[in-house]
Image 1 (cartoon, rainbow, N blue to C red):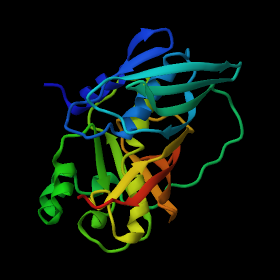
Image 2 (image 1 turned 90 degrees about the vertical axis):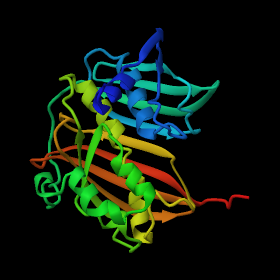
Image 3 (image 1 turned 60 degrees about the vertical axis):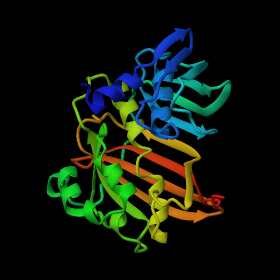
Image 4 (image 1 turned 90 degrees about the horizontal axis):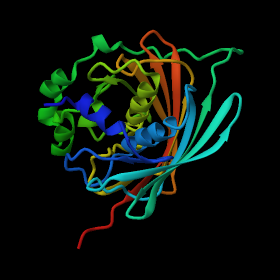
Length: 288
């Protein structure tokens, strides 16, 4: 039986159906809509398939409609520009004849230049934190059913929160969170695969940061939550199957939207990627 990581790699390995056209599928795990990180990762894979040997350095996407996990997603790539240093691609993800996601991606040939980077926050290392199995044993008996289902499901990305309070309490907290993430199995050496897997993982936990200050969580059934856009910048090489610290904060919520930022560090403190996302946070309409 394939592992969760093997299933993720299979879903990221798009089927070419014509020049600049690719088809992707969603895992059939009972989701009501396609996970946003999967669409980001597949769209990045589609764009990368039209670029020869130049790594991605940034992407910016907009979620336009909920994805239907029951049917394939068609990715149409527009080769906007091939320059000497930068290449630009636009990708549209299509289902039922309508765009569900659009993304621009920029690829940059490696070159030397000025360099500086911020320091990684001083937080416990992943080996000093409880594993997912230990978290389930220690906390899940007191967690809501929706939280238990989330943490008991086999996933391709392992998450180790530095602080688990948000998952078991309604206490308002500072809108900051730190989680260690990594793929749950070894990945091929291709840097493009590591970029796609990190793009997939970057949508996990980020929107939830907006809710910390309000004592709420993405598991609250009276909230309507959805990622509206997602931006990502790749600064330096990394491996997504080694521990990475995802440091997140939410500067503001308002107007039914929450704004979130993220910085991703290697375990030895090197900043390798940054993210930004705005998400919908709306009181759900009462069911009749």
